[in-house]
Length: 240
Image 1: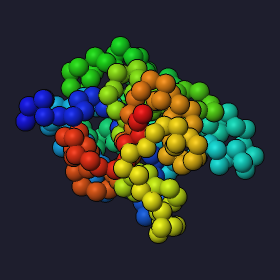
Image 2 (image 1 turned 60 degrees about the horizontal axis):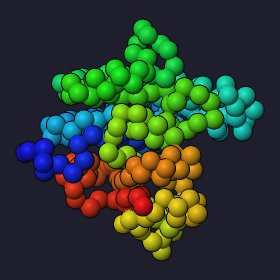
Image 3 (image 1 turned 30 degrees about the vertical axis):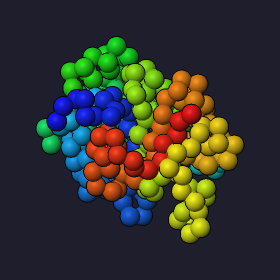
């Protein structure tokens, strides 16, 4: 398959912590990590340059902890550390499938991962390696959605692929409201005005200001990432 057939050649995949969790929504499920890794390996065969931002909500949520009395900044740092656990298990599984990866963290921990350095990340991508970003932005009060938008712009990604457990953006939660309307395409402003909760407002605004499209899709449907990259209409695209 030629590069000319690929719609998106450099992407940032955002995977929330819940995608790593077991049926109870907590911890790390090796079977789910394996499924995600196989999807990524399939995409790498296309020659696509891919960065991945991982969340940590399956292990620890800073926002929830802060509501229970933990200092907000401390809670957020704890949440950042949770993302590193997910990054390492994803790296280990991908490497077991012969996919070369690098983990870069926004918080220094040189014994287990590289520090985030933009030029180094770009070099890894040029060499065809998958770069897994952990630690969010390295700052409290910012979500991994915002970190995903920031890293996507820094690595010159053409699109953010926001992996979820539903097949796009709806007018309300489709798991709770059967009459919820699905959008095939929606404007950044409408997402903000409707408070649809796809990504936080900072992330949406950052993408809007830099005209970076977001595609929200179901990660658990086989070959969805590949279909998106080949230009098929999957999920919902957020753009102007």
